[in-house]
Image (tube, rainbow, N blue to C red; front, side, top):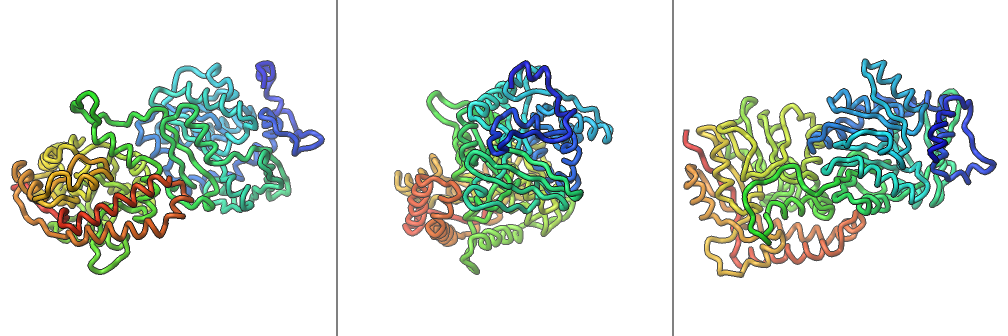
Length: 563
């Protein structure tokens, strides 16, 4: 719309019916939403949303995403009737609410006031957003399928450029859309499970083509309203986000990180302006060298790695299993957790455990359920941490388990504050493993226990033999059974046990290779690159061969801090 139309806006407050041309299917104009969101439609919008049901289904998804990234100020650019502006304000965020529709803003302000809140509102077209707001924000949310009101690519690019400019240097944009891929390729279906939760209202398309989806909203009083939107595809939106300058883009399906492409009603894109992570690791890296923690973080945050691990391992963890009683990777992983737990002193509700390199957090959820202890998940992958928080909420364990973004060479916890330090197959990613053990000693109470597993090389291995193994995870080397015993004792620990499970390491990588081969097509369908699959196949085969040659060791290590 032009600036003149902006100044003369708000005609929708006076309209008594939606306005379309002689051919409604020809109304494919970005500005047309102004003639669709009339007050009589807006007044019924909350029947479609059902705030209570939506809050229950959505949970704290967006709150957790923002808090995990340390965000405080939020610009809600598609306020609608105010559901997210209100929920984020109630959660303690500083929210500015923007919408192009005066009718929507009026309803949102009314909804906020009824809940005892004063909403800060701005009416603005996204294409000129920065003319109407002040300052920069930690985060922008563009939810409710609103981005699909932009019918022209130049408008989408212009809006994303405005969003990018309105964010601070490390800001994040959260943008959602309907699963138009499914609608265009296979037809329409909806569960009304997450977004449109009103069970007495229907929202269905009466027309779909590559340039237009015309939705019809039918209400119990027999009133009907329509919206014309552009059915943009998921990967197209991801590409636009990257081309707008966003460095990382994670895509969720109905608030889940793993999904079949046909399943979600909606996709949620979390786009980060900067690839710089939440925590700086400290220390010094020589010019031209790379901190292995940055390499590890980038690897596990990648779409390829996240989809692979969550698919093959079942989405609970990504650790080496014990295969004496099963060939199932998920069951074997649980057996490892149970075996380690049985080697610990009795834990109860007063005990505290910290997991170094917690991944998706499955070990701590299982341990907390078994013992009632409190747990902290320390992990450097924001992608894994997001999923972990979701799974913790789903298990109703938020009061028992917290998730911290950080590294185990510099643990952000007080001295002598834990009864157990736990780790599974994570310390190998450190370039200073002795420091990790020293940190474990520091945060443990006197008499506390360090228990961990880690894929290791044998005590005596010829130089260069294991380089193909190192290459899979971009490692410089591996620890060994002797190294961990000597480093632990140097840190002050007493050795309790180093239980050998090397055969399980070999079995594990062999099983993962089998599952990778069997699920090749499914992984490709879910977006995992052919290059990643090929590289993973080669790497896993190197691990199996190294185990067969006697060059690897794996076991459960238990050390005790003197009382």
